[in-house]
View 1 (cartoon, one colour):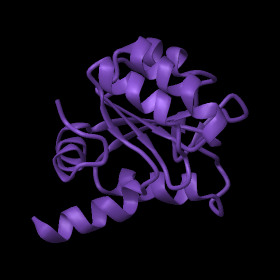
View 2 (cartoon, helix red, strand yellow):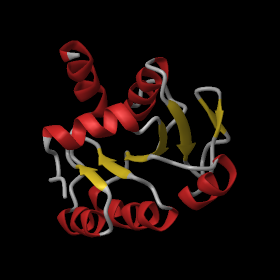
View 3 (cartoon, helix red, strand yellow):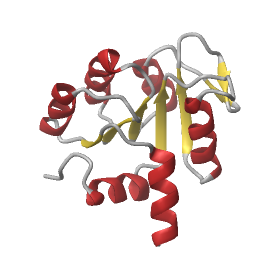
View 4 (cartoon, helix red, strand yellow):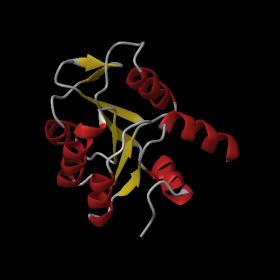
Length: 142
């Protein structure tokens, strides 16, 4: 079993999880969710926006829920969470339900109990960290 936030967990996610559902992805380019997702998209990752208030973000159709995204878009490797900490648990539970391989809770998003549930369900977990920053560092080290 891999540990939350371990270097191995981060490397595995960045190397193997190529389809990313971004929960809370905004079409506003001034929002971190947009700039981070745009960066990951430019790095060759498939971005699936999940936001009930959007119809399209970064040229991709947006879905109101993670379940709707999985039903329409197919397999989701990673669920990247840009929601408040108190909303993260429900998103993690949805990620487990749809069979995602990993969850990534962005900077400031912390839910220890949800992370433990994800690990117990066999998911890789990163919490309170930025995927863009980690990807840029990982890319330099390769």
